[in-house]
Image (cartoon, rainbow, N blue to C red; front, side):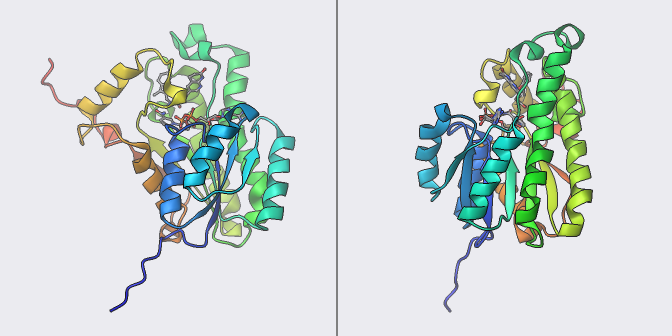
Length: 268
Ligand code: NAD
Ligand code: 0WE
């Protein structure tokens, strides 16, 4: 018997925001979505990243690349205009963007926190998700489209140095629920993945990041860290019609770390 093998994202057109290099979580997502048959458009933050992102995108069959600074409504709106011309519609948006000034992520929360840092972190890491949803809504209307963002356990628990990013991720998870409720009537689903720590550009320069990876791997039920492709596979599922009943959900891809409280006692 002839069996046709089709990816579960066949026919879906998806915008991915947040590829910087091959280590980016967004790159793992692009790779998995491409394998499942999605057509992708990649945006990049600035000219400086253009060549690198275009080289990567080549392997995922991309032929449209758009510069977009998510801090600017004008930049987002120009991007959506290009997508409208190129595709006419959109079946999904992946938001894999986060930023706080480096000095906010170093030291005791109260000492490191500033009003300016709070505003920047929330603008780039939280509001930008709503901004993309708002600007992309008309392109996604009535298509069983889906939005996805990336969160981290620091939204719910404190950990060293994550500081204002934890506060921003809590707001991002809440934003996921409000967007899900707001866009449900348009058939648009909105979800988040809470990923375990991965050594990406955003993690480089973070004090003791290697120690955090070791800590997580030793305590997680799976006794290891996760890969960007594992995040990508969950992202592909959530943005596909296989997840048609799921919205407003925060899905952990963290080797189970979040369910533990005491790990094992072998080191004590
Ligand atoms: P990354 O550095 O590869 O990706 C961050 C991206 O944000 C980059 O592509 C950067 O260009 C983009 N960006 C920053 N400011 C922007 C702006 N103004 N306009 C447009 N783009 C902008 O790092 P990553 O770890 O892949 O981060 C992706 C997402 O995953 C972030 O939301 C991060 O908080 C989240 N996350 C990361 C980890 C981890 O351990 N690496 C764990 C859980 C969640
Ligand atoms: O969400 C993230 C990355 C957040 C991030 C990291 C940086 C470092 C460089 C946002 N903005 C910046 N700005 C910079 O200038 N993660 C989940 C990875 C991460 O970052 C941490 C972590 C973990 C985990 C920062 C401190 C402590 C733990």
